Image (cartoon, rainbow, N blue to C red):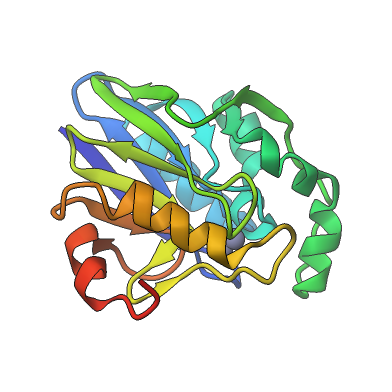
Length: 213
Ligand SMILES: [Zn+2]
Ligand SMILES: [Zn+2]
């Protein structure tokens, strides 16, 4: 079974997920948003208590709130960062982004170790995820979709009854809507969508209820 644990971290309330194969105990951290020492420790404790090997850190995108814990997670778990090249520029102004939103940061971050693009397959134990490139919230936003588990990690592309904001660096409203309609709404209705903020939703629910679509 693919298991999923979610945490809500940092003042921007980012969802950090751990997804793992309960047989091989191989896992990934998706959007390491941990910010305070307590949050770092919560994540570390969880990985240790479940006896998981963290294979990689997957970024849905590289906005500061989703990568605040990357330096900690990379160091602690010995894992590299997977992200889309089109968001790489955001790493350069990570500290500034953080300060604009009123948070304190030493600016420490990690470079992309694995460039992920549309259609790439990334595995977690026995589970294959397909990367869907859905720009518009950020240029390099990715959705990690696992057909076998019926799950998608969508970052800030879509939320329950909403979509990602498009007024940040490199945002584009038309592009976002088009990407959601062609790449997400075409997934099975039962697909559970784990979003970057707030509760999970499903493709079927958003098809009928999302006022932006
Ligand atoms: Zn974002
Ligand atoms: Zn966010």
